[in-house]
Image (cartoon, rainbow, N blue to C red; front, side, top):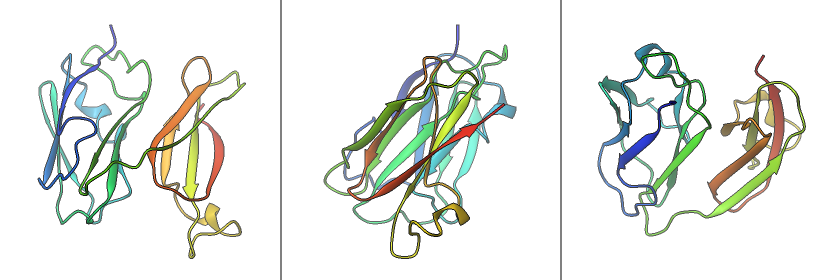
Length: 168
């Protein structure tokens, strides 16, 4: 069986978060080599959080303060593997907020594509607009499910650009 998230600290949807770490607890021991490229937080935090692997737990330590009144999304992609190299069945997202509410915008759809892939999403801002968004890393990435479905959750209000990426 593929690994699944058993619980998280904070719980998905927690508001008024003020700790300096997040703990993800999985159903199985994980392949430590798959963790670094499988778990990301958005919006990006500088300096980048440190990931610590302890058996069935992954601890994300923040090395600096979090923004006030910000919804953060931890994305776990399908490259995460258990100790038997069985991959996560589908991407997962966990959200928490340092403010009094969780952003609840979403973008979802279905891709008709025969290979594995992911969808990238950029939030357009004054410095990242329709003419230069592609010069920056995407704000969000989500692996397409086996049936072609994707869903970005917990998005703040704004304008976004979406792009398909072939992962093969």
